[in-house]
Length: 336
Image (cartoon, rainbow, N blue to C red):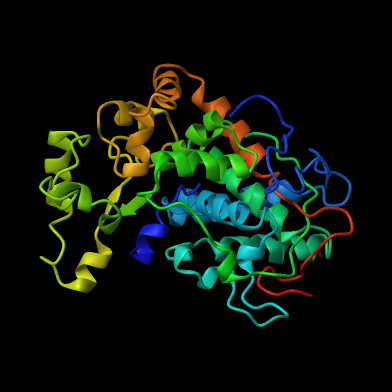
C-alpha cells in the first residue's frame, strides 16, 4: 500500500462519561490518575499560556487547528498519550515515530515547542509535553468553533519512541478493522464516529481518494457511493493520476469540508449522508448499518459538540503514564 495512504487516518484526529473502561489489553492504563485542575497550584498560568500561543499561531495559519488535533490523535493512538511522537531521538537510537511513513504531513510541533519554552520559564520541570499537547489540541477545537472543554491532566512523558510501533488506519481500512482498532483503544463505535468528525476541518491530499474517481475497482472506475456532482467537482481539483508532474501532484489538496472548511461542525455528517465523503473510510460510516444511525443522529441534531468533546477527553486517557512513570521533559524533542 502507498505509504501516503496510511497517513490519511483519522486526524486524527463522545458519551458523557469521563472515565475509560478497559475494553481490551490495549488499554493498560485507562487514565484514572488524571484530573481537572492538576496544575492549578503547580503552574496556575499554564492554560493562559497555551491559549495565547495557540491563538497567535492560528492567526498566522488557519489550517493549524486540524494539524494540532491530528498530532494529538497520532500520539495517543500509537502507544498512548505520552508525547512519544514528539521525540527526535531516544536512548535506543531506533527510528522514532515521526520517521514512520504514517507520520507523513504531521505538523504543529513548533507550536508545542513554543508553549513548552514559555512554561519552562514560569514553571520549570513541572508540566509534561503530553499534557501540553492535550491542552493545545483543546484550544485547536475551541478556535474551530466548538465550546472549550475541561482537560484532565497529570500525564507524564515517555522515554521511548519507535517508528515500528506506528500502526494506524488508512483511507481504505474496512469498517470491521476500524471498529476493532478503536475498540482496542477503549473507544466505542459511537466515539469512533464522533472523532471522525475531526475531518470537518483541514485538507486532504488528492492521492488519498482519487482512486475513488478513476480506478475504484476492475470494470468500475468510480466508487458508486460517491455523489456524481461531487465527483465532477473533485475531478476539477484532482486530475487523474499520472496526468500531472509528480511534484505538482503532491501539492494537490482539497478542503475536507468545502462548505465550512475552518469550522468543526456536523456538516461532515450531512455530507456523508449525501455521498460527499472524501475518503472511503469516511463514506462507509453513512452506509454500514452499524454506524449510519449515529451519523444520522449527529447530522440532524446539536449533539456533535458534546460528543466530540467527550470523545477527545476519553481519547486523551489512552495508556497514559502517571505519577512516577516516565519523565517530565525539559525539551519536548529530547528525553532527559
